[in-house]
Length: 153
Image (cartoon, rainbow, N blue to C red; front, side):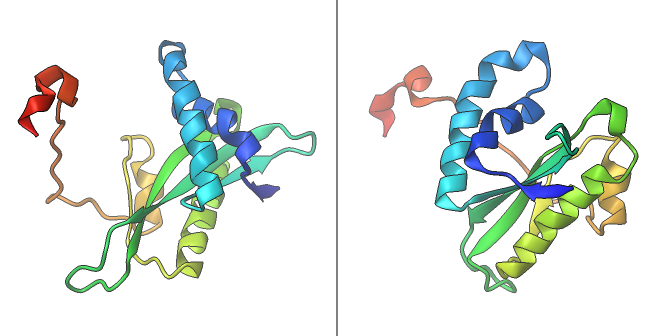
């Protein structure tokens, strides 16, 4: 059964985002963000659960206020995040179902541009759903102001 995530699921979603023991320290702040983002309506999550509430899989959609651009009058874009499946239940379609729920939620909100980050093992899933690799994307990591001197602003 697939159900919508609720703010009480924020800790579970943070565990999906940071499953490694080395990332334990990142979970509380991410869970707090997910809870607030759900309350603001900019994070929509879906969880595949067993009858007793055991979570098999999940995925989220973050709504990004992007602003209209040339060729896209939409104010928002979506980003698929936190796609996770319990290792014992992988390759059974659970992640696909959760991601499709995210895509449907985006369509209901009029959002037509969706992005995501992927791993090599998940790329075939996203390709089968129509996602295409974009070569033009770039990223810059800025240092926090306290590291470079706040007097520059």
